[in-house]
Image 1: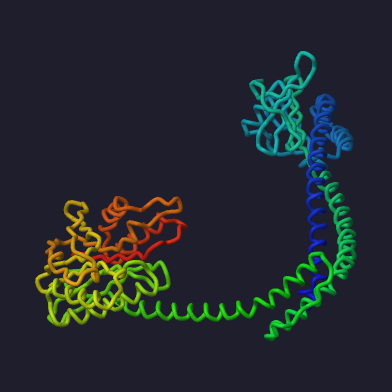
Image 2: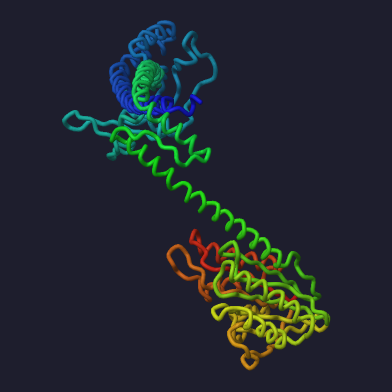
Length: 526
């Protein structure tokens, strides 16, 4: 219960806000401090290298080359003590020979084989005229002096380059001396990190103090409003039990007073809203049931017809759609398939498509003539549906024995035929009038035979595909659809072609709302 209290929310919000402010302020402070200290380390290391390079060279000539390593090493350690940000010193000759390495020779002189620098970029810096600085960005900057003694940042060829900024960290410094030696100083930022850690600890302490203050402040603020909120809570519990006549006290003109008035008004309106919600849920259940019934009408399995590979797919715009298709095995041994599109979509269109499907099954069991089948279906639909409801359709007949294909169109979109030998897409003749428009339409329709060779494909579709629109209200259109048919009809299976065609139009639409049902039926000659 405490987790859901207003007091806890006040405490949490204010505490989080203060913590965020401290974190942001601390981050900016640490970043600024880090840049400042980092740049100070660079300046100190630069000054240190300028002041000690000649001294180390003299020590090298006086002691190291004269085999007085102990004295040389002792003097170098004293130089180390003058700058905590230098963690290594190397003495090298102009040719790249390593004379001294403070890392490995801190306690004893090196006695192995001769050490020579093999990295050409390091040799280039040793033999340069100007001191150079290797940055953590893996770039190298040289420093020259102009006529007035000022610093000029250059490259190895003394061409001007960008300088060293506060955000840059120096890895090492190479200081050439007299064209004979070079002193390499390794730079460390461990002390910088230690100082930053100390600052971070102080920020955490201040943050803890701020959280305590936030807790006290939020507790006081929340206590001042908890009483009217408790009254609203009690009112909500009463409303939850169905007591829509309960009213909370309306005190004050602040936000809580306004909220109390709104709560009381809600009680009056809630009963009406509850009734509307019940009605809406009932309608949703009925739509869900209608959708399930319509889906049951669609084919569950891919038909097996010798010499043909057939597959269909439908994407409805609403729970119940006006598009439909089916595969029908006629009583005379012929095979029928159709695609239909009822005007509009939703429950009325779904009812008409369901009735038409049943009529097709019935008509095809009595006659094998495509024209007669559509005439019978049209006669019943014209009598039993309203004048504003009609259905376009393409009905296809396949003779499994001969492999011949016929079709008849009732005002539907033209069938697309993909010619596998010529790799082209043609629109077959359409014609006819939609089912249910007029009582006698036998003169408007005709049976067409389609010659199909191996690899040829027939694509039947509803107008929801070419009329689909993208987020910019641009229409998909027949040119794009024919391009997709030409591109994907070489796929091996009708199932793959169907999926590719529907995916192409969905990809074109993007996040646009689908305005109409989209159905495609693929017939491939194997």
